[in-house]
Image (cartoon, rainbow, N blue to C red):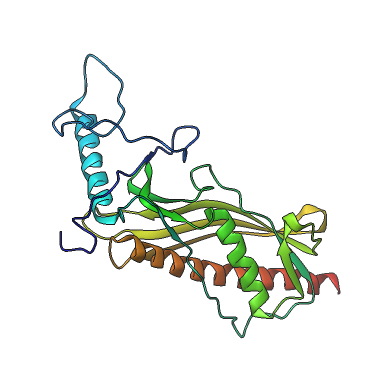
Length: 259
């Protein structure tokens, strides 16, 4: 390969199957298998008759995983820690508000609520990059990014994490559904995909507004640093949308309450 990092010794990526309980737990590398064996690189159940299509699917998925591990793993004995920094610029049309906001830690599956950098090499399969991880679990990174964006905007009186005991006029509840690198085409670089379901609540847990946010940013190459940079761009775009949406809907409710 002509891509950077190719040729260095790499560690096999650990597999994460999104359909199994406890996804995201550490697994040990499987024994080496000859590429001619059915389902090489995957755990299979013995059966007397093995359909041809599942075998081909397993072999193709295994080959893609080898490609991902070989081109994207950083190698070495220690994982490289990545901490993408999203820098959000306040928009002139965002309202300046006098109320306070608390942001709860986003809910997420076990696969996403970890420091592993999730990668989806094929539909229905979720795995992790070898020798690379986030500085914090994805839900924590998103919460921190949002709190900092609201604070830096200068548009809100007070904002903080719900876990600190802060009582706000409004609360932002989040469900982190996707935070992963996705391969739509094995021959092309992946895209960073982030999806969040948001609810803005008023006092008494009254739902004021809901919205699904999804951002996709293509990586410039298959290398991990370029994938991380795509996540930085996706987090910046997503955060800008969420801050503007929250300020606008919260202020609209505040204005209605004073009439």
